[in-house]
Length: 263
Length: 270
Image (cartoon, rainbow over all chains, first blue to last red; front, side, top):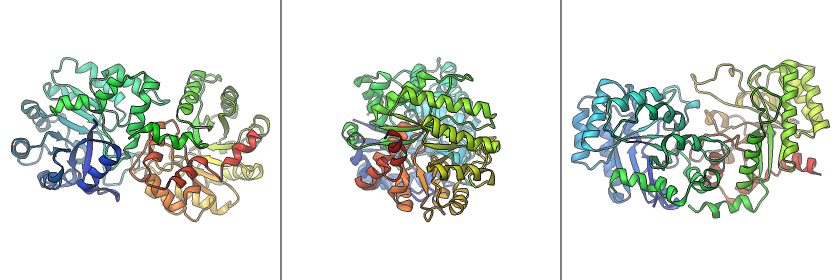
């Protein structure tokens, strides 16, 4: 089984995309053999009130709720954020919290986001932070310029030590080198997706594994903004280039995330 | 997704990778053999048959350093004959030296093309002697290219070429052959514009960006014959872009086979 931690439905404001709907996502999942995906509303990232996007998402994924795992987008600094988050989890069935500090103009290690992270930890919901939605080197003038830095994530993780955190879509080996040494005492776990790591020619996967081992790596594609087969290449060649066993591949494909999300 | 089955596409055809690098060990003039061998091993895993390699710099290097860097490339090519093929790096600031160095690399060392970086844009008049030398020798020019967002241009790379520069120079030199390096990185929408009617400009899809349908967009704008497979070290992203492209198998094979470019390598082999 494969579980994709990092997918989206909705409208992306900075370029036209071919795929936008839950039906599109299911089509791609079927095409590539992905059984389940954690999905958030791209609209919610850019709405002033994220909850409008969260409601849209739930309505759209209803026919596919056995395969699409909803993650709510919350801006911790918006009016009613904590109440909205509780509603999302306790009444609407969201299984994860997805945060976009840069896009929404707050610091992950700020007061209100720290409170949100701690609340997620108390409720037992992981906080997922995609460091970018796509490569930012050609960013639109209205888009963010750079991903969140490792230091900010480290401080946020230390301030909410019981919260499970998932990081996606950057050269995460560099982040792990900053975060891991500082966060060894945390009870909450930090997971990293393989999105921008590579095991071919580049030594990034080796560098990541030195920091985390296999039990905190997860499969994440960035669909539907990013090309899915890129991640399958890594899963296939990791045995030849890094010595990954089939059992360890299964951990990345779904085992680690299934355990975290209690699927 | 069954990658073994998908990679039959690469396995059963001749695959050219037009944008890779070799390096020296630190600041020495010695080839980094371990890294070169790792490149060779991994391209073979991916069924890539021929690889064009260079050793460029983003700085303004003195001519003797550039000569040494090209000699490092020659060592890499010699270490993996029939797999690696050299592209000569030059800097247009060095005037006559650049043209002479290209001549040396092609005639004495069998290099198959030229690699330019960000010292000057491709349409800068300082580049004209280089372009004219490449026309004379009938070799392509691979130019590092990026259209950065407003705040992301790396310091020292402000003269990086993008589509506007390529259009200017392609119109001035219709006999020259230009490859836009890693055209899919940065603002690739910008890079798509203005080059469709420049038949002597080709797009290499290398790099770590793998936006959904990016290869499709370039095939649609340029035609598959003007899109070249390349990796620039980002093999998962580059191979994945081909496998995930929603284009015909025929177009994928055209990109991998590079029918209009294969002659540069084939003539070296013969």
